[in-house]
Image (cartoon, rainbow, N blue to C red):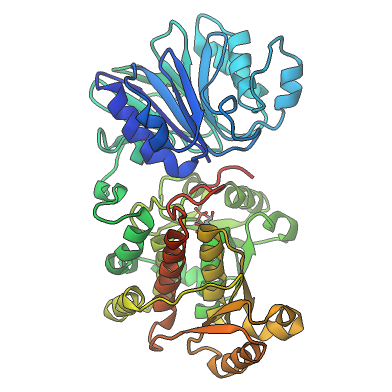
Length: 527
Ligand code: F6R
């Protein structure tokens, strides 16, 4: 959940550093740093850090951090330098304490990363690929690494279970955790496989054990990686939902439709994607069972089919659950925005989400695209009707939530909206907001309701009459009820856009950055 960028070539290092760090900042943003022969790092936002950087030499490696081991501090920020080795890391090393005990170094940080630098320094050989070959198997855990060795003109890299890509240019090369980090400079890339390592030079790249590699070309719209006239990526992506309807519905799902119609399927997903799993269940009535990815290993029986939903395709919980299901003989269908992701590589069938690049940490257009996939699956492709529904969601006036207790309620498929509404709201505003099925209130939660309570009530057609009864029950306890009202036709799509705007608006009003909610990151590559 950290962002990595490394560059070797003739361009101005400062320009690449500035662009690259901003591009991967969504992956982690509690501290930042780079190594270009000089080690410079600090806590805080990329923008504040960059204001102080005057020049950057090439090659360099750089990093934005989402803390796992060790508090947010300058010492724990990356890069880490031990002896001749400087490196940046995304991932976690489980056996770092045991490794530290065996090495004769004084530790400057509390991180699990520093020990990797120490190992590489300790076993440093003339041929550094041999050093990597020796050291990497000692690491138990996950890693994407970019490494500079003093006196060596290359940038070395290694990858296991977290994403790392090479950007292949003319007389320049990049290593980064996301395509967007180098897209303005080159659209040719290689997605590294687990266990791979190697190096880049200005005119050359070497991946140990892989020869004759042909880089892929990114054909998508790179403008999506920029905010344009919108104040935040999230708001831009909320508005893009109007345009993505046709492209998402154009995906051919006929092959997987048949599987959904005839098979029993476990759906594995996390966070917002998990909510999309429930949407699919309510909408289609297919024989599917949604599971939270991190819980699935404890609940799995003998699945014949699993369906993994992940916009990033890199969520470690989802990937691990899928791997375990595969070991039990399950076949895998995945729905992801990144068809070259780790998840896609594990799958028997990959359905592209086709939502375009999403930068804002909170999933918005990728969630809507996941909902549209469910419609596509049942042959519902009313593009005009869906676009109108999205437009209604974009234009509806918002209400203001002011109470210390906030609940999101709904029945049936409206409960999915409640879950997503509460998640978006708490994630962006840091105010506790909980979702319940409206009919479940009287089994406990109702005792929480009084005049200090705001309630957002989703009143789409499914279960509406009973939901209204539940609404009166909370009103009678003094709660301040806000009804989410839209026409019945694609109510859920209008309400989805509305709940995203509601969270965004309150975050901005309360001085929070919706693009970078604290403690979170866009692709969650640690368990
Ligand atoms: C919330 C959000 C997260 C993600 C979750 C899964 O706004 O974006 O809850 O949905 O981390 O991510 P993916 O879909 O990439 O597996």
